[in-house]
Length: 136
Image: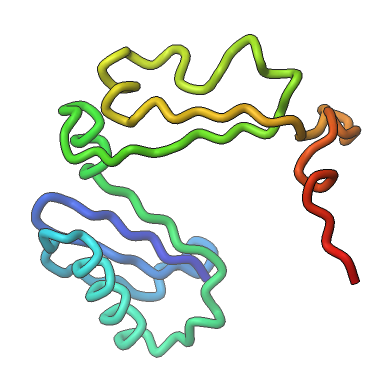
């Protein structure tokens, strides 16, 4: 079973699906902190349907809050992009094609590190597993 949640400007909607069948749905007011409305919708949905959480295989959340923050360049917090793929991706660092004001708003924190795999599964380069070994 899967849960889909849509956080809108007024309401937060949640639906529980089993394959293509709607098992249950609910609507809660969207809260200023966003999380409160999501939690209230999840609690109501699970209470209404009686489905135990161990039967849930996925939860998808969609929201305009992120899109609005991105477009308006407001209420964004600095983030870091860490790419484990050197030497293969050194020519195109993360955020290279982002507008300058968006890169600045997000903090422009970028780290490129050795690692990753080729399309056929071969190691790209020595990566984290070679740096941090866990001993028995």
